[in-house]
Image (cartoon, rainbow, N blue to C red; front, side, top):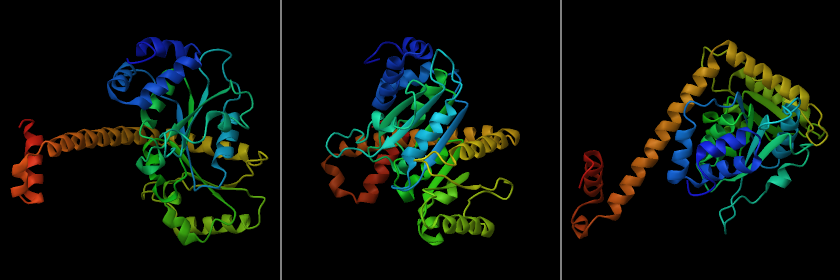
Length: 324
């Protein structure tokens, strides 16, 4: 480990309630490389979070406020000691200068009540596809390994490419706002296709009732969901005014009903198995891409005599053979 001690020691400290150790673990997860690999190995056999909730939605719909309210409600009745019961991973836009998260933990903590109840970590997007930072899956495993029961992941708010959340979360909440536009534009955004629950936030504004009606009509028409023919869950459409806390308790109740349905139908285990395979496949592609980049960089002058297709096939043969 490059910083902060051995992973087993940090995991033990974080499980006992050390937020400093937990912060170091997340930093290691974000850093990648051998330290993150060692941390991942140390977590093999440890339990994961009991429930992972994703919050998606375009910029301006009030995701951050809604996330804070949900986290505060979920944290009720937390243990008096040990790791926090609830954690939030807030994926933020990246600074073009430093690559770090533009928004910070203290901004996210507004509305959370007692900050000791919820662990909040902002994580830089850094251009990763799908609205998530690349370190989110291992960070979620870290939180589960130290005893966090509920992890809420808020995506960066990039609209059309937020679909990666389905490979992280058990329950996906898609947030929209009054005046969100016509049904065609919402469908194009892809948010409705991944949602287990739909919520119209800022419901005190003009147009909220129209937004709810349009969403219900899309569900009736079967155009707002990518669920297979064996699925029986119909995403409920709810309304909230997150700034006032209105409707947040009802939203959380609906989310817990979805979790109960996942467990009762054995879909929770299936979703997590699918996510595991997806992450393995993504990491395999990353490894192969790195090897290909190294081979391409090492191409000599003789490559100029070949077509790009011929040179590419030579690189592929070298990678497959594992030699020169």
